[in-house]
Image 1: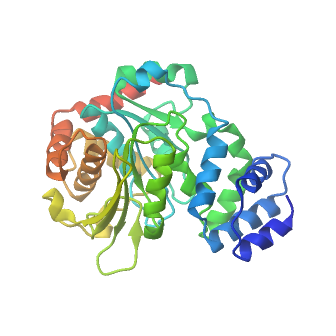
Image 2: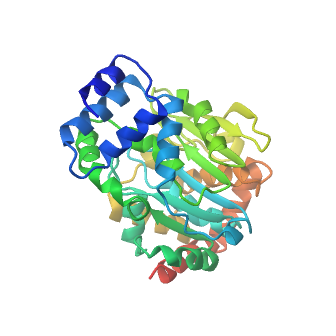
Length: 349
């Protein structure tokens, strides 16, 4: 690859599947020039990644992954992923990581893929590590852990070791407040290819395309959400309880539906953005423990309940959002959600 491709991206031209395959080779080459990688990713972000390009990136990279879950287990129940693209820059606590344990306690088999933070102070891998989870468990242990706990975390670096070749460039661009296509790809690269998914995005223009891509990747149903913050132009890659949330659902017949929801749909009080902020991995670990143990019954718990309800609706365990909140509340109140975390810590070693 050469800088002609960067100029093509900057001029607004869409890259073909073959060109993206070559771009992936360049980006994941340990000997590749960081300046070229950064130039390409910076240009792609500024121009805007097209749905076709995102789908091609996902397909190319998934072809190189290993599926750690046997087919029999994949078809034995509701296999769910809950994650966001990151990149909203709001500094929220690790909402989807907390949701993982709540949804598992409600009967889903949750296979969550994640990474360390690039555009945040604490990614899913960081906070789970701070909680005592072995995020680098051997691949062969994944089915055992999933059957024993109902949830498992797949550290992206384990399943895509070549991503290390672009880590430094991603950190560099994050200091420029530039999320890369890898943020958009993260939720699409679960090697297990779960049949249901809740995905948060921070660009509402991507929602319908993202749902379409999830369908191409084999999801039976999915919710793609983008929340906003009341009286501001800020958006979050979560269901928001600080404003409205736009939802694009992928239904089992392939149809898509777009609608809006607000905190009243969950029967919970609206919150301020400041009520939902997190910190580094250690602080976020404390926040998650307080929620899962039931000692935090404030806005952060409500944020987890809302997102868990959306996840349970996406995978058809809940019939509606109020039902989802009821199930999620019981999962926390009964201690089942916290028990899932304890089991994950135990069985991950």
